Image (cartoon, rainbow, N blue to C red; front, side):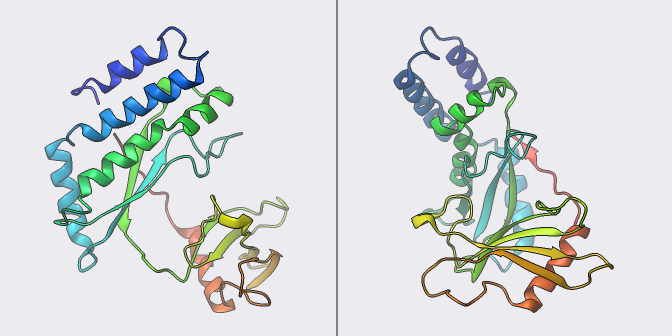
Length: 233
């Protein structure tokens, strides 16, 4: 960022006359910023480190580079769906991993993300993008979001599960599709007890659940998982 003048560009952009008053100007400058990030080479040492580490994921070749910023999941602002994740395949000229990394970095500066942060008065100079790297799961049977607390009753220990069939998005759903929402009570007082708050409305899922009872039971391990830290760019 510093080497290629990106930080200087951001600083100058944020003090540009008319930038905050003119939405078209903001959109245009943010577009230039994203292109600048995507056109700069990734530091060779960092790229080699990523290549070496992803080699440990063999035989899986498709690697997911997932966005993780310090401007989401904070008090009063969740930032769901603002930033993008991308897939890279080592040695594949059509899906190079450096391009995937740069696309994730650039997604920090979409017009929508910038506007959301402005609305919630988040200091634009303080934001940073990290990347969580893991194997890709194409053609998944289900995808979801888990919150390790009971969102409906703080006095009843549980986890809240939102899960959708296939690759239908949870945070950016098409056709107003809603997911299965489950409260799973994983404490000794209520072992293996869960309740559905909402059911998916994806066509063909009427009367069905996205996850089986056995699959739901496996989520009890989530509360024991450590937090994963990412390296910011």
